[in-house]
Image (cartoon, rainbow, N blue to C red; front, side):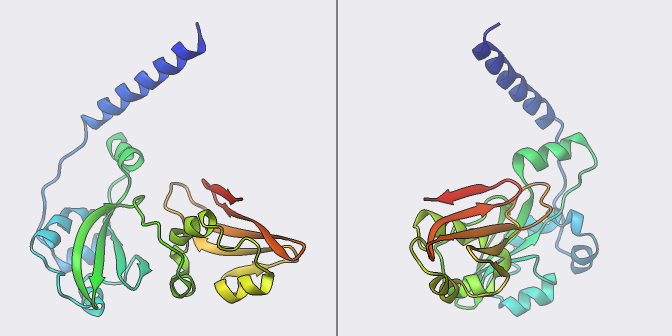
Length: 223
């Protein structure tokens, strides 16, 4: 039996299993938004998400007004984008399927001129990849990973001295060693994360020669 046949058979098998499990996904009834339920039953927030969007309950509100209504923000990307996790059960194979093949869902709230202008349901893995911004890097440490791709791809740090790197990226959440600086960049959205990803900046002859992103599921480098 040749290798190509085995691989094709395996892929077909995976597709069939995926379709079989998809067929048993449980549908749920959308619910009216209720502050008490939102606060006390976080695992079933997804039932109220469409109501929040369709009735435009957040449009025009300030960030403080959103927090007053929905509670503490789950994830802050920057001053113009926040997320609330919508929950979801993991009790049976159907929900495990949704978790692995569809991803977790969040309420993605965008601001413009200090008020909400867009609210959507987004997948946890669909995080934005952004251009490096010094202010956001310093202020929003938990989502630095949104800028790491830009730093690596555009070779922003290659050739810089240690002082130049520190002047650009600061010293918050970093470890400085003789030939390397390691910055914590937050938990890159993925399964089974035990520790945050990091951006490792490697020096040779006092200049940056390589930038590597390390994590449970990530390994990217430049050059």
